[in-house]
Length: 594
Image (cartoon, rainbow, N blue to C red; front, side, top):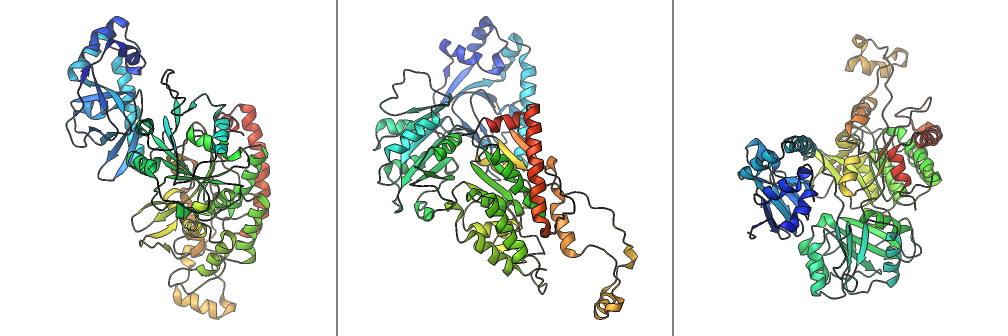
């Protein structure tokens, strides 16, 4: 356990920067300083242990921590400078509800009961501040128990070469140019890092070619790791990578694979991942600065995302909205979707244009009639083979790891009763799993035995998964289903099996009530949660919900061109309206233009 020391006078200025002490005078702050203690923690050191008594709470002066609940093996929060740790259990008089571990060398102030009583006496307003903190943290804790925690931007990023090859100098030149307009980030190397200037909000360390002491020290300070590889022949991790992998968790690692030119999909990325467990993959072309601008937004927490919700045949609206956004000059760094939205998001991530995506819709749903072929209902109502083959023709055998822009799909794992984030393997299979309407199509069974069905059941509008993978503004296209008109059906006239069989054998008696069939009922049930209030929206998340075009149907793909045109024209008008009103989410997206 690190040695504890009394807070020195030079740290009083740092204390004043914390919200808890903003109302204290210099005299009051000096009086309570002797009651406070500072703790220095190394990376990976345990600050709080789940289940222990809460005798104190902490305020973070520097560094970063993660809170993890053992029972769910899940990170429930990341905590940075200025934020409290352990205050809920401290004031409730209970035990620690999570373990808290330092993600990098960190400094905290420890406040026990005696110190807190002294602070209250000197600054009565501090209780109100703490009540506000508690309310916010309880709300965040409740959300994280049910949802994914947001990814916090990194403050220290280490860039290392992968394997034995050298990183082309052009990479560093273009990255520096992309970051030159950012006030948040500064690139440092062993030559330029003299320690004379104050640390920037985001420090990007260019490590040495060998594992020098400076490289070791900066890797220990880093929250995030970027491994840069070049060439088609993969190489095993080098000693710098191995050292970094011991310090930085997989979720905070990025693989940047360099290419001479940009294309929708590449090959061979999986081989580069052997021995490398990476949280995100970026394909970067050296031909211009476009991909470097995207990478810089990821590094500085400003990456833009496109989230495509489910909605059956209304899913074509994603194409119209995307076209309107593109004409405005907006581009996106990451794509994700659920159900039909996963197929659209995959096409956009593959850099396909509007007409090419529309041609894919026409091929799958009109020409191939992929969702119109019934089968013996042993595994499903529809024959899945035509749909599978049509998806393979449109997406080929491309793996998600080889898609140019980062992409994910959402499925529902019925084996574990949870959402499944699909970020590896064939694109077509991920889209198929995400679009597998229960009962209508058979589930996709993984090699591990998981039974995957339509992502709309778990998360029809996967904004939270997007926010858990990257920081920055998002466009969210939510296709809320229009209400169906009341049915003019006499329930008592619904035939039993014998009457129904006779009706089908004798066409003259086939005067059946117009009640929806099983496919229609199942689809409407799956997407009944497609509402805007089902997901947590951030201030910089732009929600777009295009209306259904006249005569279109949730189940009828024959009007897909009308759906596209209607959504495109609506999106153009809506973006103009939002601009005139000064919408902050649209302004954040406009600010990311290349």
